[in-house]
Image 1 (cartoon, each protein chain N blue to C red):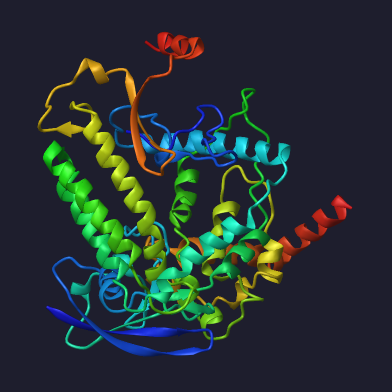
Image 2: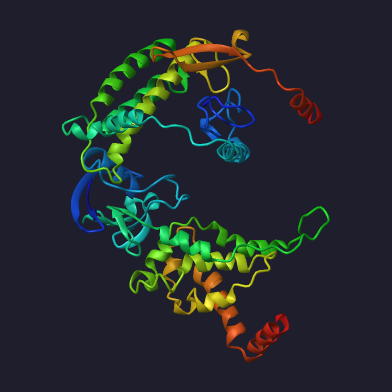
Length: 221
Length: 249
């Protein structure tokens, strides 16, 4: 089970200065997270992330912020307010939940996931037309409209990576590939943004385990 | 069945109860109904929530006039022949709709003297404690900081004495520290002088609304009151305190 790619020691993501820890990050639990393990995950790596983030903040000055970029993001964020007759973002979120539950849920097949990807494109278009009422203060409808963008990206990543991994292993259960496959035993599935903005999936060999960790495992055997 | 609700909508400048109705099915809690209403009728209805399991203490509100966690209040427990009213906590300033500004609580907490353990008992830096001493403070540590006890307390709610009284939540916090077997700090003087423990007249409303069933009054506040009395009103205790002060000089 994966998450945002981070440096194993510092927990820094590939976006310099952004740190991630806990269930959103890394792949510490392997193919399946057992109940209770997330707590130790977030305690250990939350501490590390906090310490390295503090160190990073001390050692680096604040970077330049492009005012133009900020303006663009602020304008995009406020767009739902201009669409008073736009679709209710909660309805889109609900449809997304149902789609992912039905098509990319516990038991997965290629046809269902391909169908989900098609429907995700439609949901993306609907999300771009979502509208909200009220004002900016404490407005859950607006927050939901903003969340949709991220939910849709994550949903697409889940579907695409699950499609790529043509095997069943841990929490990934493919009805069309019910067995483990050696091809996928020692690779991570990685989703990244291509130059044209599209989502790209690739397989990358697992990093070699450092000597000191091998030693720890050996000692505890 | 279709259930009607009266939900308070407004902000610091005032507000009104608005009518809503939604379909309610078996097992639904008040928070589910609020979410349904948000989703279908009032997307800008502000409501703070998180875990939906009675453990984060975020969704505190007043349901039919009673301070409750919305996620732990089943609709089947309420009379549904008339509208269910939902309004924000009254002891704190309203931000919007059902959300209130509870930051006063966090400021109060900072003023309580922190945990000050004695030196370790063993050379390896660890301590030895009796299980029964641990059990006693464990109850107070169940607190999820929903602030329903603060909301129902008449000293805060009706008399708005936020600057003179820290409220049941923080009396429990002090009790947890004071009764901790390792703690060496003395918090009794400020309990009496600045934290206003004397204002509590043991009506036990806080205990009644506590979603964690902490015996706030009986196990926390009353023992603290006894400590204050011992130190300040018992002639021997008073003399001992004076002696300690003189000796420390």
